[in-house]
Image (tube, rainbow, N blue to C red; front, side, top):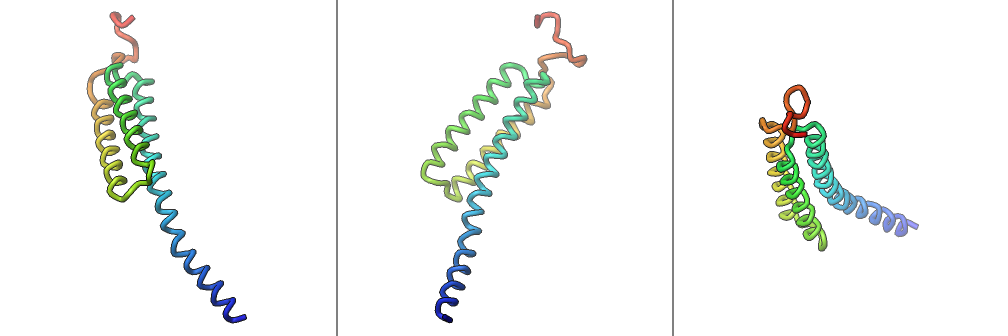
Length: 120
């Protein structure tokens, strides 16, 4: 009976050691996916509010799509630590680019949120 309890205790303890590693993998993956969706939402918001011109929006959308393709190809065989860091660095660069484009003075509409006369 003691042997059965000790085997059960060892199994319980070892399963506890490996569960955090699996959870860490999911947290990293969710972090990348969440950041990617937040960047997409910011681009969509910039399009809706007119903070992005058509050219800026197309350029940012192209970069987000290219990032998704790179991520998909890296995830085929699982992400290593180095690949995760690379993806996070690319997301950071995209975030800076989106911030720069959203905060520049290029606007689809003027300050009164009306289209210019020549845009019609």
